[in-house]
Image 1 (tube, rainbow, N blue to C red):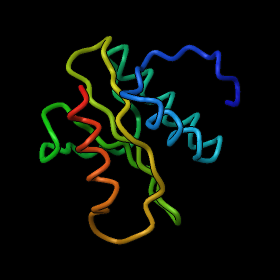
Image 2: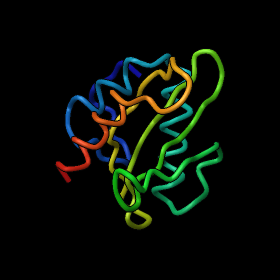
Image 3: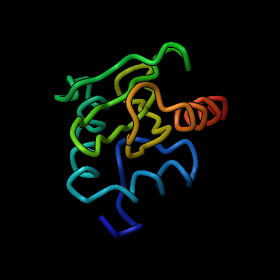
Length: 110
């Protein structure tokens, strides 16, 4: 995952969104990238999701639960268009206000 020349089916909304994804453990990156590829091709991502309509239409959070838990938030308006908004480690119970604020601010960039 360290190769910056890799082409992805999804488009990060900015460099920080991609950097956030790359800070996660490699196995988590692979799982999220595979799920985003699936969404790009119009297939179910194959992991738990949550619709974040509070942030905007079409915003979805991919979830890997455990300790720690991992999240990847993207927007997809149609198959073939996937915008990566944020990826992070979830360490608290309940909504993660800081990461949701980051996601909302990146959504506004679209």
